[in-house]
Image (cartoon, rainbow, N blue to C red; front, side, top):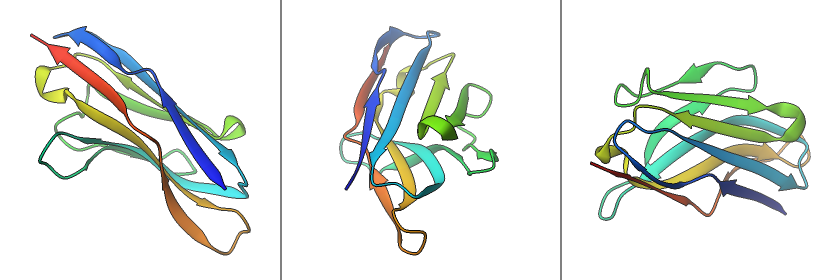
Length: 120
């Protein structure tokens, strides 16, 4: 069994910053891509940032230059530094990780979500 636990959400004003944390625990042999997604009511979950096991990163244009994803492989953790936040960044943010517990079978795992609210 694998669990992803997130923390760090909250409420800020426009222009503020928040840092999200996510730690994976349980039966883990290896972790591939890790990422952060967000979702607002009535909309699909969308990618915010992803990072490969070697550190390569990917961001959509909406957050590029404002958000930074990083990971600590020794701690099975991924982080999201969010700067210059805008009201449209308001959403529930979910941590995602592609994990194998035996080196053969891989699957996606999701955290429980953490609310980020940006007020103008």
